[in-house]
Structure formats: structure tokens, C-alpha cells
Length: 107
Image 1 (cartoon, helix red, strand yellow):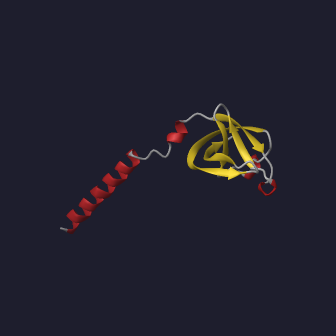
Image 2: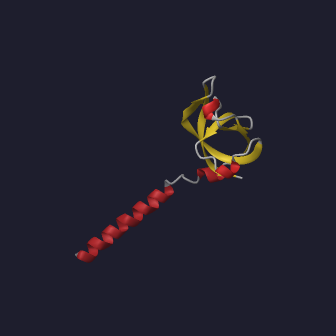
Image 3: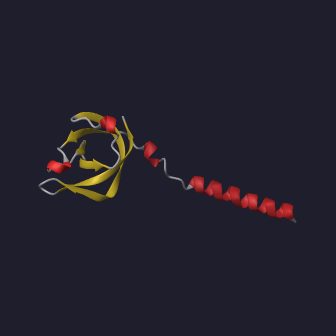
């Protein structure tokens, strides 16, 4: 009886794991090609600027929530994969709004 219960629990556990792996789309971004972008320094937030902004080729300007420090160089060209967030970043004297993005990969 105990062996049958253990076997049944094992079958349920393995089935659950396999189904969750089939539904896992966390690596969909791995299939997305890199897109070109330029990192721009717009000035300090304290002085009316918007800090670091990414100008993505043919897409517009965005604020990254996770731009690594070693990429924070004005006019630096990069290639990246990113995910568009639902919130925007409002900044600057002109109250500009930049959509947030999460960088998935950068080079």
C-alpha cells in the first residue's frame, strides 16, 4: 500500500515537472535577435536631466531598469535584447516620459 502511494506521488511529481517545463517560455527572449542601441547621458536627475537613456534603433528612447554600470558611457553603441515594461519614467525639466525596459542581454 505504501509503495503504491509513493509510486503515485512520484508519477504526479514527474508529470507536474514535465508540464511546467513544456509551458516555460522564459527563454523565448533567447530567440529574439539583438537590436542596436546607443546609450546617452542626458544629465543628472538633480539638475533636470534624465540620467541614462537608451536610444534603440528605429524604436525610440527608453529608460533601462538594469543598465550595468560598465555600460554607462555616453554615446556607447551596444546590442541588446530587452523586454518592454508597462511603467514609464518621468524626468527632466520638461517632464519627459521614457518607457521602462528590462535588459535581458547586452553586448
